[in-house]
Image 1 (cartoon, helix red, strand yellow):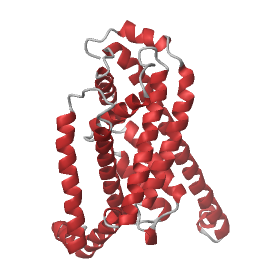
Image 2: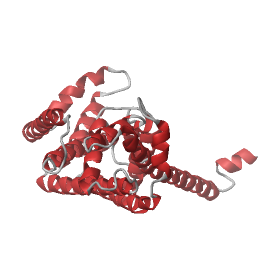
Image 3: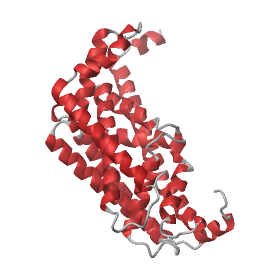
Image 4: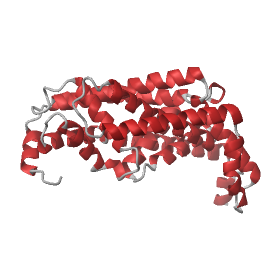
Length: 320
């Protein structure tokens, strides 16, 4: 917001065509479905949970990411999926780590593929260095898991067994579950599927972003490639934990990407605010609906269990 004329931003917001939000939301929903499918496919086939609870847990995680800082939604979706299907939390955590690695790697690959069509970006050198480091780290993890299996992770978790509430057996089991959750880095077919669906979801998010840009006169001339560049900038800015819902970080990174096209701060902030709402409200609504549905379902099951117990059960004893 620094050095931004708020009146000019408000003018851009008033003059925008909000009908473009309809295709933007459609692309966003489809991207969310693909990302849920991608997460499901990161589980090893022998322990892969059904798609519906995976998608529900992912949306719950997005809800908490939008209302809590430092990406606390990642922990929330681990707990949600564990409660719904019983998959070990350590295994789920392993898939989440792999998923984040694929997200960042795919975004960086899209950045370098799109260089002939992108304008000059000042942060390309930093992105290139990060891409090399991330690729090297993923290759190193693959080699370590292929050669040594669970042993390095068991060694790393061994100090936790000194805690009074953590046993040696639990650390051994957790290490095995985490490695099992990283099957998406070790099995070629899973790697190909993860990369394909990850790329497809990011491109759809770029289309969703471009639809929002089409609604503003100052950005209407931009091609869909601009939407992809905005998504890349936002994704790279959100690698580090930030404020709830990435407030401020989201707007700044969008301004940075659109500024490469010569768009002023005011003209860039207006679509950035709308784009943030588009990526905020649907996830909040979906997450709350899922939580309410799950709570009502658990309540119905508890009442049914109490009725089945009859007068001799706990409810009957309380009435005596």
